[in-house]
Length: 62
Image: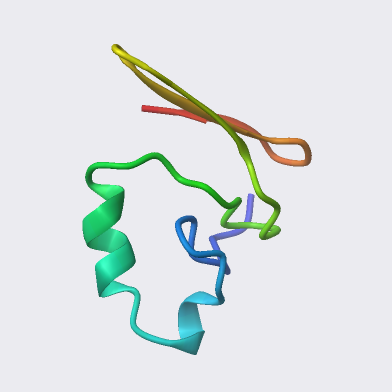
């Protein structure tokens, strides 16, 4: 699988700017966008963690 091209929090290209705020927020939040294709993911948060599903690239979990 290829490396991420897009920020998984804001959906913008990683090389387009500074994503330090996104990285800090991701310590507490699940991803919202697929880092490979920029699609908005289906996210489910439970008391035990989270899962995020991209229709193209599958599921990621905490």
